[in-house]
Length: 175
Image 1 (cartoon, rainbow, N blue to C red):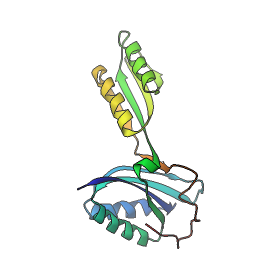
Image 2: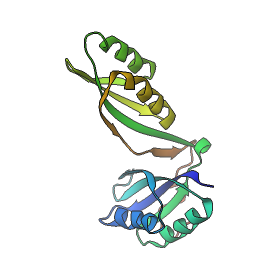
Image 3: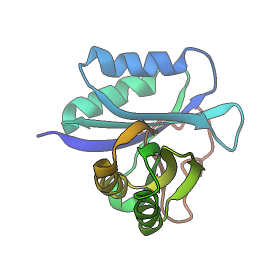
């Protein structure tokens, strides 16, 4: 049975690293549901957050292969209850004088922000978990979604512990 897994991967910030990592998933026939990449508190280190829906054993095999890549420093699976996960959505919704106030109410209900207003549309920025964003989008559908951009999931462990607690040495390569 497939399960949703969120992996946080620390890598050297070098060209080609992302391509090699995604190629490992592709060769196994895994579809990456979400992918987000950015630098960390160390400019020469990037964090890749990968969300996949796969069985545990094949994922373990891919994780072992990832650990063998030279530029991969550390891989951690972030359990849903032990991590804070967020996504960003920018959505452009059809709006006129009659519907604009209703749309603004929905924006406020979900603690989102109105970032642009024109005579024919309202652009909204929202952050949160996937369920919250899906619920907001479902409520906005009745007005007509003109355009939608959604980021990949980013995640960080809860509490004081950090993925970098035991240094970033390449020897610390536990899955």
